[in-house]
Amino acid sequence: MDGNRVAFDAYNIDGNNYFKLRDLAKVLSGTEKQFDVTWDSTYKAINLVSGSAYTVVDGELTIP
Image: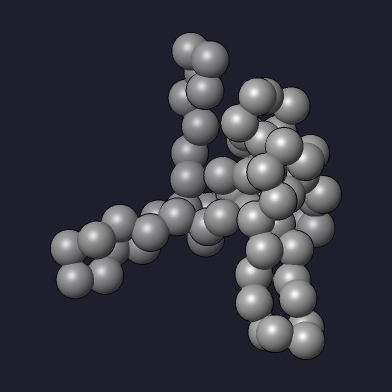
């Protein structure tokens, strides 16, 4: 990110790479590509809110 390395926890399932949305959101927060991650309990859905600063919930960018 901007010339700095950032380590992400990733998963490979059937040849596809997956990253945690909250990790990506934290790294991009404060940039023109920032987004927030929210949970809609009514629809049981994850919402990505473009242009909003990410709200930290703890545990982001931790690698087991």
